[in-house]
Image (cartoon, rainbow, N blue to C red; front, side, top):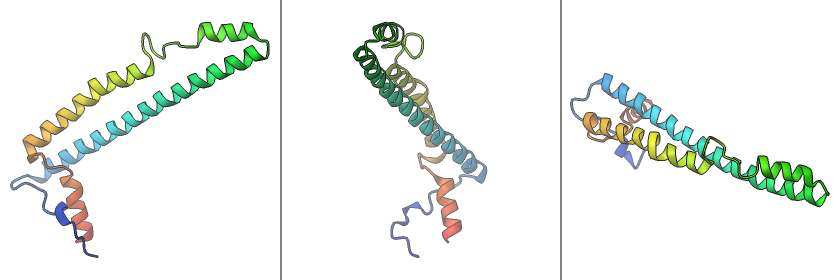
Length: 133
């Protein structure tokens, strides 16, 4: 099987040792895990928003059923409540994106630039080359 787009071959910059390639591979893996965590955080944000809309519908249904005391309780105690002290989920997402996530990406890029001239996925490209020949 021929690979017409073989730009993945020979990614390793001249003089880059195996231990550094392995370390950069581990750093890349850590970044991918952070990206997955970010996706889960966005899922949490979206699911919480969905639950909030469903809570509003439940409150309306309670009122329609003549259960104003329970609707009032949910409205007063839960509707619009912060999910964390002082924050809704959009604020949690923004804080994560602007803080830890951005800093992780910037540092991964810096280390990769310093050690491998910015080349990504050297470890994976070499694994592909070993396996596909």
